[in-house]
Image 1 (cartoon, rainbow, N blue to C red):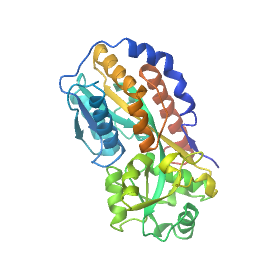
Image 2: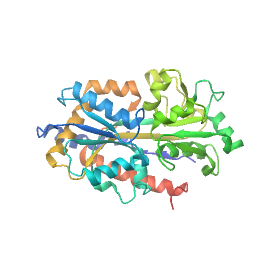
Image 3: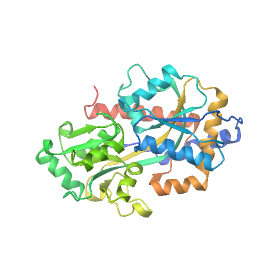
Image 4: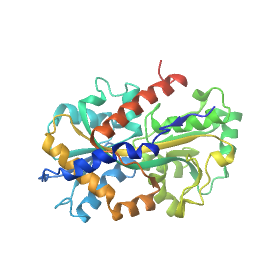
Length: 332
């Protein structure tokens, strides 16, 4: 069985182009007084990367005239940050929050108690980040089938760490691969949740777990340092450039694909002027040559959606994840 997340992610790039141009042209001149980005996890993970890289790039491009403060607010798979924004900072025009497929997953599964996606305003995407499964550099495991065979033989002997909660996006990536490989009871796969990919990799290097599931952007630094090796990228074909040496799951006979979109939401009561200003800034950044270089260096695939088009994309993602979560028994 093939379970594919965000099947139309790359194709959806064109959905918002006309609207993106209109928004970019209608900049209100809004300038945040104290720009802030909340990364809903500990340092080192994908949300942290999203805030820090976009904040730096916005300032380098002259789209922000001061440094964006990055606040790490971990807990509840992003739920602590979501609740903070909804209940305590509902009309903060200076605030944006990193989001991803993990955010949509938690919302789809009702994991943010009392919260729904329409309580915030969805700004824009900055690209799509393919999932990876990795092991420590000195692990005897060399391929994805090798890892999955060990799970088949004794599910209790293999623990896999990820930066999202049980039932979250990182967990689902492992279940996608296990299901595609013919593991009938995917709930037997032993997954351990941590607050962010950085903490999950730390546990892998400490020997507490045997594998790591995350996204290519958060794994890249650990690959470059020689700490981990990627045994599968959940992409339809090999990526370009320095990622070309990493094998896909599909070429190893495991028909599993997973693209994690990355983007931002803002407080639900943010003013229209601030909303359009932030959307315009992110849109301008995405269109720049500098951001294309960032995407290439970090393995991000194109996903160019802003404003209403991005909000519709998130809504569709939430609905799709609900359907798949029911299919594999995560929710009823």
